[in-house]
Length: 337
Image (cartoon, rainbow, N blue to C red; front, side):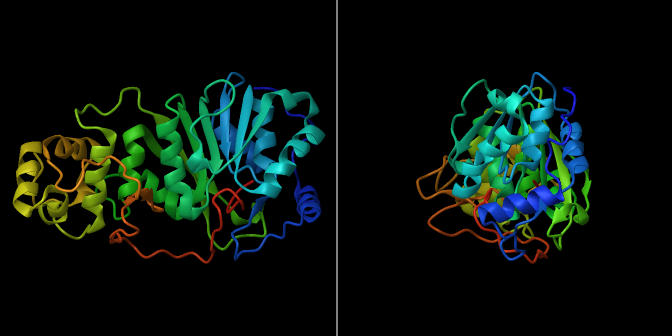
């Protein structure tokens, strides 16, 4: 790892000064919380195990707190930023604080969900702070779009972290848990206190580590077909799989046949199944309406579930407790940078 550059990272006064110059006024209503502690961003980089030969992609760099820490350690950093003001300002911040490393930095001014390619070498590591409403869709999109990403560390609200890292049988195990596990081994990697942000949020934050599977899930079904089963199973999570998958299979009887062929008890519920079991169900099913391939009307909701024709059944899960309304996903660093 490269040696830290003295005074290169942003501190409390730097963040406030830069925000004032850009006309950015952080408010809880808009989900703006900027990291003001250099030790925290360096801790994130250490936890992500960023190496000098890594090509890091960062989603939602904001004012650049984490970006600068990543540039201290990585061979190259590409930041994806949707906000016009923040995207325009970031290169100047890098040039002013780390002029000797500007050649290692690239900016992509885009919605992360629309990114299909990145400049330079293929990314090996994803490090990002992701707002609540888009954390799961963005994470899944990046893992699917860039198979070269071997390691990921994301900072998300603690509730989202718990759901991403949940194991089968957990009360919070659901669509995010299964889909993340399709790509990687997932675990909680620590907590982030509220006092390192300006302004301090009313929600806790957590780090989630994802290490891409050495071998993909063994199945003859496509990813989209497996994810269609997952979506259906958790759309009505209190129902048995025989009932929950009836719409997907065409009837309860057809769903039961697929479950029996896959070796899954028809009376089981989605929260008890592994990603491998969902894959076996997909192999034996004949979906009635579509085969899981995204259509033009598809878009992911905040759980990463496909939404068709402008609506989806709401998953039956514990009620959410958060007091922030989020704007565009990387526009305001909900709990980071």
